[in-house]
Image (cartoon, rainbow, N blue to C red; front, side, top):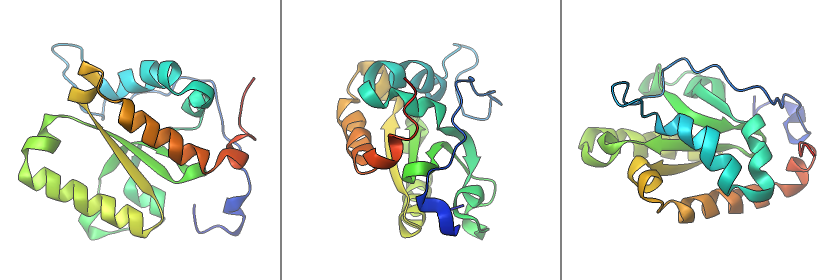
Length: 159
């Protein structure tokens, strides 16, 4: 999608519809705890101020090859939690396995570097940060990134 000549122009697929969750984003079914879904449904509307409308632009559970437009054997069947194509931003909600698992941490770093080479920023928020309210710095980083694209995003602002 980023390789299209007209990508710098606005592209319209904003919707007010709640996405259909395929239960691919990991959560805790026993405790009914789905942090990525909670981030989408509660954190964005409550914390993103004038950018809360990006909720209608985010693509949940999208595979990496769909983002970059090419297969990469290192990232087969790998998805990101949320992608905002208009501003080339990936938002990941990371559970404890991302912090504790050395292999997972290495895979995350490799994937983030790959996306960065393709011009896509990744911002990771841990589930611990979401639970204890210590995510403000990450939200500010997201808002700062959105500010870089304010003119483009103004096309999507739904009043």
